[in-house]
Length: 498
Image 1 (cartoon, rainbow, N blue to C red):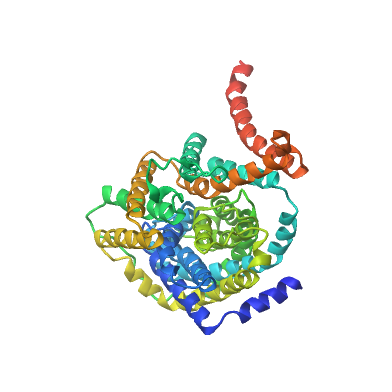
Image 2: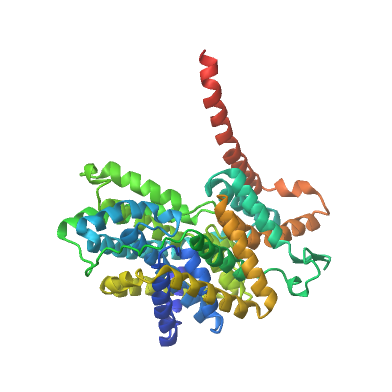
């Protein structure tokens, strides 16, 4: 009941001005997210500087609209161009593009939009119920437990994302290295600044995110830019027949049920639940032969799972301060630009902001449905923007936004260095998500480690002195050991049978 009362207070905080911010965020997020080659993480990073001039509550509300809008825009690109902006949209692209080529683009867009609304609403309602419970638990844990949680987050992003664990560890190591830049939090000694005064405060997370995602992706596209025009499938007004509704509503609910728990876990993400949703719908479908030829269930389920996971990601972000996806990492940067640190104390220190944010998620989700069904043909026209103009504009706005975030030329230099780093990582198959997570959580993990060791007078056994830390480290050990044992068993099995 306390959560519902706090949520009602959050709705009361949504003044007409804040509602306008939510509307602007939804429109901007959708418009940028629908552009080819730009995923939700890149959209959010690119639009982060837009919110600098607002008050904290207005900024976060607009950012929530951008977040949900970018998620929806990505589904439009996946369906019409088969160009998913992130791995979690791949399953939507498989069946959605088949539907579009078969002349059923309006139905594919409609089931994606309505499924996103249904799943987003269910997942946000679960966020209201689950977040206070996690906060009550998080307040009681020690610095050593927090450090163990961050180790779990590090292990999750390196093992789940990317093409190999070695590449994931390399990306994480780069992120931790960048996170060390600046003054030592205990001694005040400068680290890795190379004599540049502008780096004494560290590398701005916003600049890292925009450089890695926007600049790096732009340089990569420029290297592989095709001169032929983009072929866009014509789009009418999205609609669904009675049969489409009957085939979609159960996948929407199942997708929401699969996506939210995965997003809410510190080791979560959206790739696994979208794949599980796709497989589940294929097995439960009364017309499994339609899969591979444009099955509407193959769009409805994964898209619902993707959006439910996006809301679930906010559980560890708001309650523990742990970003479990690239987009969540940029959201954390949005909080930090106002000196606000997500975690268990956030609900006590900034209750108006938190509950206004959660209330705005319901509002933004509804606005997305009301706007994007009639405006789908308009968004499709954005796909015809020539690629050279599009990516030149991205570079321009990335540079302007980064300069606004830092205010110094060293920030611009850092932006393009991060862009070159993102290009190299893309070239050699290194996932950028572990790097972003390392930059954000690295300094916090160091702080919690030092705090735990200071409280124990340097006794390292304090790191495994609580049941929670033991469970978390056991989880990491199992996650590392089980695949290795399985691989060894598969290799040795033929030899043993000879």
